[in-house]
Image (cartoon, rainbow, N blue to C red):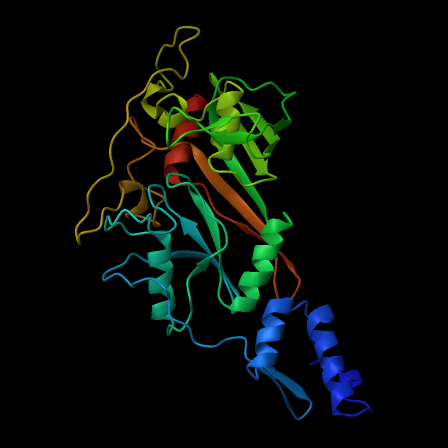
Length: 342
């Protein structure tokens, strides 16, 4: 409700002008959406209440897979959805035509189970083998507002990373541009001609020949954390693409380790094919919470040890600051335990 100021006195034109000011300044409705609603009759008065067509039915935009696994919901309301992304699962289809279930597929199934009529709109992405929370917008208002928040860097993403070697406490900020690696299509590298990239290290716990880092992104370049930490000589465990040590290189707590051998070497195991025609990695399957108790984390784990611990953003309608946490997956818990000598 805009309040009585929009209704008090004046003619119809003044009332509509007051309504528009309220929508644009108080509600912070994106100008693009405001113009469309006005054009399509999506703003109207009902007595002293304003009716806004913010929730028109939309197609999901992606198929709902039969027997799709349940999305692990971390937060949901009428405007926003935050779900946990398991290891080995992409955010959206990669265009290769491979019949792999993605997080967008799981979200489409979640919407369908709730009655449907909501388009699948992810606001940001995570690497395929990184776990953590992913934010979705449930209508156009939320999408435009959250996209703008991403551009303004007010969406805060905080990660836990387990890396090779003891990171010096003096390393707080990595400010180095990132570009493509001309010699490897999938890799990125620190390059003077690349895009600006800034990573902050906000926490450090030394382990046996390794470090647990808390990392916050100021920019969102492809593979940013992986590239920056590898560039500094501290690649992530399991990150084969950036020369990280294998998870199976970690000795059991009772094993005898010679100085200098901590955290070296490693092998990798492939995803496990699942029934139903969709290749779903073991890390994203039961038992237990989806993606929490899969095979990775024991010897031979095949993913980088990187997990999004929390996601903070301003709610597009209420303006409330929300901080959504995502518990550690079991594989990283086990790796940390081994590196802690427990």
